[in-house]
Length: 250
Ligand SMILES: Nc1ncnc2c1ncn2[C@@H]1O[C@H](COP(=O)(O)OP(=O)(O)OP(=O)(O)O)[C@@H](O)[C@H]1O
Ligand SMILES: [Mg+2]
Image (cartoon, rainbow, N blue to C red; front, side):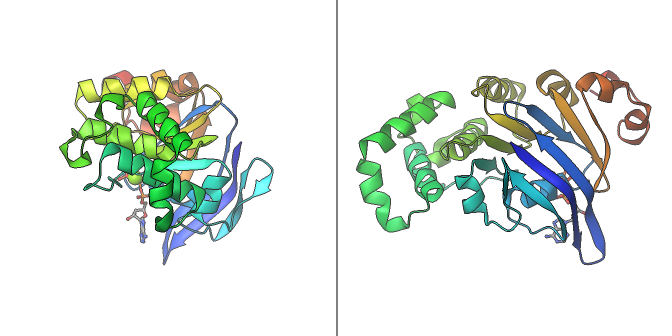
């Protein structure tokens, strides 16, 4: 569904992405792990189209989207949520979802009124709110929501584009255990044919919720494999987990 082929990216002299290739088929739960500054978010920015690679190709299905802007990629089925909050804080949950729908469809702001009155848009908004566990809070102001609920809404914004591939950048960062549990449930309950590419620091979560893991280190792929392979890998133990086993790390 999503394929990156031999991607390179530098910021000046700093090479942040080095020869990264990745394949995310339909339905895959794929995690990207790696220390701070390993280039995980940069890779997402490259995949989503916020950054242009210096070299390499990105494909969604059979379509080469390497030079497509983010909104064009989104219309091809690639959606993302951000590591930092990206919400319209003075609006309600519903406003944010409707706005995401407008953006996803490439409409200008003047379509706002028409779209928010539109019945199918309202049904879609209600369905996504249900999916992200915020159905009861549709008309609540975003600034009143808990941090965890705001992050759930972020996932909802990405889902409004009806993606085939969803990129989630540290969806549980800064969350309480209870909020983390809710987010995990949300991710687990996503449609099975949706491919999810997830950046995550929590090893427990990665090993139990991903079926494939890529380990990035200094912009390079240190290894890719199943959770079992990554957990058992000497090179990952030494380089990333500092010689500790994954369980000790947690
Ligand atoms: N726009 C930019 N210009 C210059 N350097 C950048 C830019 N974006 C990221 N970097 C640098 O690239 C490196 C990788 O950053 P990136 O944010 O991709 O790491 P990360 O793996 O997501 O880290 P974290 O776990 O802290 O989120 C860092 O050294 C960062 O300072
Ligand atoms: Mg990051």
